[in-house]
Image (cartoon, rainbow, N blue to C red):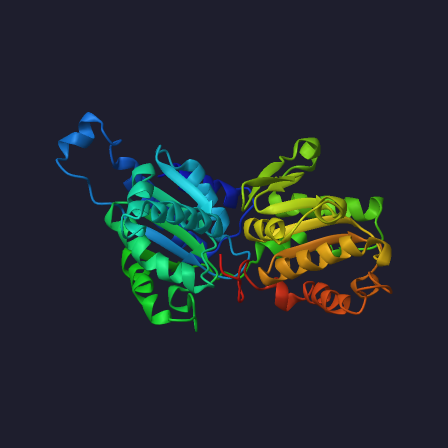
Length: 375
């Protein structure tokens, strides 16, 4: 029995997970994959050289299903317990940003097709890639992915990925989708496609009766959001003083300090996000990296802080486009946040979005779903 599967069974025994036929089937496939990956001798070892040629890579896995069904949990548990050296885990958007940056550097060399050297470099760095939340929303990514991933698989890289959609629904109705179809066929033939659509939405269940919008700012709101953070991340309240922070890379080389960051959940103050000099690229990095964002200290807005209000509008627009879950402590309800002054009329759309972001329909959408801007 693999170390991953033992840990998975322990979580069920401890009551952290519920029995779920879809999860069980996927866990068994992941256990199979762990054994196959760990059975391959390390590259360059004596045993590896006796093969005479590179061994065939194990078949990867494509996990898809609704929000909160345990896809990322299984992948993280698998990755943590996978005992090989050359492995890489990344959020899909982050991976594509890295790919685009590598392609730009290859184009500067003017040596022809830039995609194949990028694939060769990636294959030399790792033999196992794990992607979280694969979603394709622009033609630039769609045009690259088919050729890049084909080259990676042919170079011996094993891939697992999670997505909210089955392969056939990726980039659905997208521009020039016919060029993307070979990539879909690659996923279906070279990866084991498994659905996770069990009855339990773990994110919603863990939140329980903890609301999304807390008014006014103060100790009660802070306590409720602290409880929500611990429920979403499984982090013990006893370790509240030791919640990890993160330096999030923003396009252009800057970094953004995230005071609390764990398992796709981030905590910020309104002051850090909107009173400081922030722009669309900062908010885009947040929206791509986190499936849930908690913001505390949102004041009632007016003409005296219209710059902060303008940044807040951009922030909410970006989080909304990426279907990020939003939890808030504020001094007023959304439709009373900007009662009068320059920009209050334009703020009505933002208030409407803030209300929609609390709806069950919005919460049921996966992170990254929707029509997103090109990278």
